[in-house]
Length: 370
Image 1 (cartoon, rainbow, N blue to C red):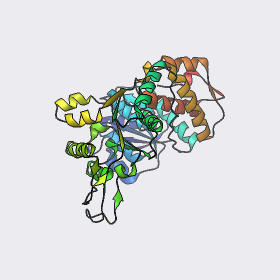
Image 2 (tube, one colour; image 1 turned 90 degrees about the vertical axis):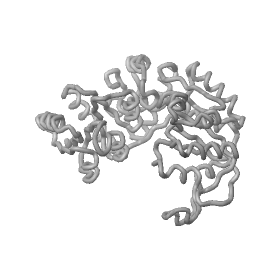
Image 3 (cartoon, helix red, strand yellow; image 1 turned 90 degrees about the horizontal axis):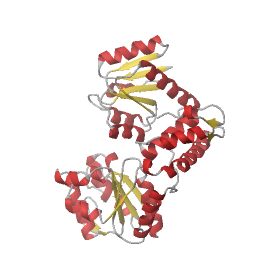
Image 4 (spheres, rainbow, N blue to C red; image 1 turned 60 degrees about the vertical axis):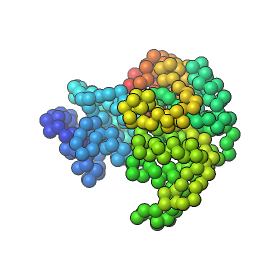
């Protein structure tokens, strides 16, 4: 089994390397993510730190784009960073100091996953499920606002399913256009404006032909602006003008285009604090936040846990062509009693891993790793 260690602390890197070699692993060492990405070596598992020079671990995982199984280690763990790792598909997150046996077990699990899946990465998104009373209350509010043209802001922790709620609102709205989703944190800052508004041929050096933006593509439908708090401050004024005037210009364009788009935005940040710190425009916030809808975390929606888990399990079995499996009563109890800091995204990861690693037709409690 070949393991790549990407760690800027030489003492930690050498210590892990010696320990893993003594256990029979073939080890490759890299002092930073940039050096690794230059070579993209053959490896079963990548063990990497979050805090590194040149490129941090989260950006590194994004660049890897699912080509490797990844184990994240850190001495500065925060809930937000752990959740971001979960969102990117990292299934093991170890906090320093940890026992080398923990890392070895995590490596073995990830190697087994790679062997069983052939490195195939499948993004599982369960259909919209609302069995819990707390979820149903939010759903009733979403149904009421759906037929209107009011802008909606979805609030809640990362991973609670804000995009699924946005899709539900669009479906219930009766709008004939498309549902277009964009994650503001996933677009480089210098490209956000052209992605949203499009551009005319010759608007800038690489604009060899015209391109419609996301506002145009969503005409008659819904534009979902996820992670809206990540929008650069200088672009917030332009978005505000578009919402006020109900028209926009492509980059390099001279003719305004009328806007017929329902805006749904979402954030897991406290925008009111950002306003106080001059990081988000107050006038834009009130324009977007006509109808705020707070989505409760999964730990407050206990009756949703098993229906979501069973749907995810069914999808994983189908996508990876696994033998049929069910959850044991003990496994179900373990899922219900857990607090799910990573919410639905974490639940998806846990079920994927359990489905792939468990033996036989029943997933037992010991097959569930958090």
